[in-house]
Length: 580
View 1: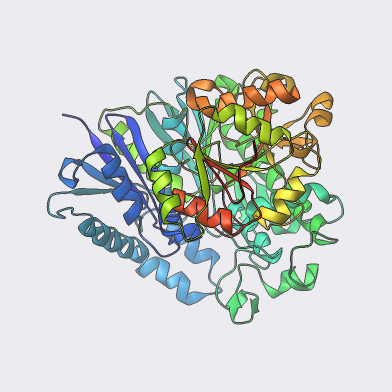
View 2: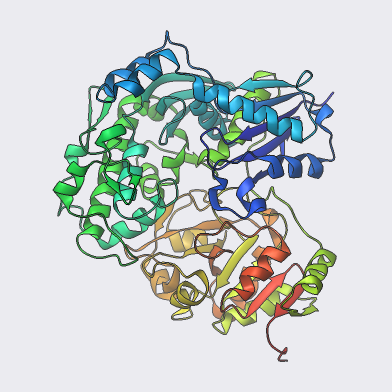
C-alpha cells in the first residue's frame, strides 16, 4: 500500500498551501493565493490548493493516510510559553494568556483545518490529523528535501511559529535532532519584519524589497546594534524599539505596527511612497547588515562544529529567502553546500510537515530538484480561454516556440511566458515568467514602468544555462531556485547589465535542461542570437497580485498592462495583427 500524506499550511493566517507526498514523491504542491487571486490569501484555508493536489494525483480523500499540519500544541512544561510571558510582562494580558491559554491558536487552527477537510469530502472520524511543530516543519522542509546523505546542520529563521522564532539542529540518517530554539519576541525575522513596516512595506511581503533597497545605502551611516544583541548563545531583541505588542506599538490611522514610537523618535517618520531616498536607503542597509552579522554569529555558535565536520547546511523559514545572507553563508570556508528550501516561507511548511510524517513512518522523501508542482494547461485550454475572454485576443499556434520567442526577446521586447506546471514558492522559474533580453538596454525599466508597475529600484534576476552559470557567477555552487546571490564576473556585468544589481550581484537561476526543457531551449536560441545564454526573468504578475495560475489569469494581466507578447504553451497571443 502506498503511503499518502497531505500537508496543509495556513496556521498563521497567511500563505495557506497544500502539498501531497505519495510514497516519498512530492506529486503536487500549490499555494491558495494562486487560485483565489488574493496575495498571501490571508485568513483563508488551503481548500483550492488541496483540491488541486488530490485531483492532480487522481485520488480520493479516503486514499489519504494522514493530514500533516505545521502547527502543534506547546506544553507548559517547556520554556517557550514562560519565555514569552516573561519578555512581554509589559503587556500582562498577553503574558497571562500565554500561560493559561497558550494553545488557543492551535485549537482554532485545527478547527478550521477540520472544516476545510470536511468541505473536501474527508470523514473526520476516519482521517488522522497529525500536528508538527511549526519550526520542525520548516526544518523538515529543508533537511528532508535537501538530498544530503551526510550529517547536516539545520537552520530555521522566521518571524515566529507557535512561540519559537529560530531553530538550530542537525539531521542524520533521516532523523532531525533539535539543538536549540529562540522564542518570541527574540526573533531576527520579526525584527527585520518590524523595520520592513517602518520602511513603508508590508510585513511578510516587503522584506525582499528592503533587501533590494539595501545596496543603495551605506550601512556604516547608522548604527543599528541597539536593536538586538547576540551574547553567550542567546539572541535578545530590544522590545523598546521593535517586536512590540499592545500599548508599545506605534499607531497611525488606526493601524498598529510592530515597532514603537521610540523607533520613530530615533530615526524620524515612517517612510511613505515609492522613492528609495536618504535616510531610508541607509536604514535598509543597516538592517540588512545587522541581520547578516547576527545570523552568521548564531550559525557559528550553534552550528559551527557540525559545519566544520560535514560542510552541509539546510536552511528554511522566511529568513532563508534573504539571498544576501545566503551569499555570505556560501562564502564561509567550511561550507561545501547550502540547500535553501525554495518555498522557505510559511507556504513551504505544508511540504515540511508532510515530509516529516512520511519520514517518521519509514518512507524517506526524494530530493527536491525542481518546483514545477502546480497546475498545467493544454493548448486546447489556452484556446478556450482566448475564445471566452472579453478582449478577444488574436492567437495562433506556432511550432517553433523557443526560436520565435528568442527572436522577439533579442529585438528588445518583453514576453509573457506561460509554460508547463506552475511553480511552487515565491520565485518565477520559467513556468509563469515575464522575460526580457538582459543585453537590451532599458528592458528592465520598461518592464518596471509599463508592466509590473513596481518600484524603479527593484532588481531583476537572470535565468541561465548550466553551461553559463560558472562563467558568469565564478562559482560551481548549485543554484536551481534563485535562493542565492552571486558576484557577477566583470565580463558578464557588461554583457548582461539588465540583470546585475547595484552591488554587482545577481540572484540567479542556473537551469539544467531535464527540469524545464522548453525554457532551456529558449535560452539556447537566445544564445545563438546574442551570444549570451541568459534571460531576464521576473514573475508573471502585476504589483500586489499573486503569480498567474491559469490562461485566463494570464490574459487578464496581459490586458491590464502594456505587454505586447504572450505565449501560452504553443499559443502565441497578441493584441495586434501578426507581423511576419
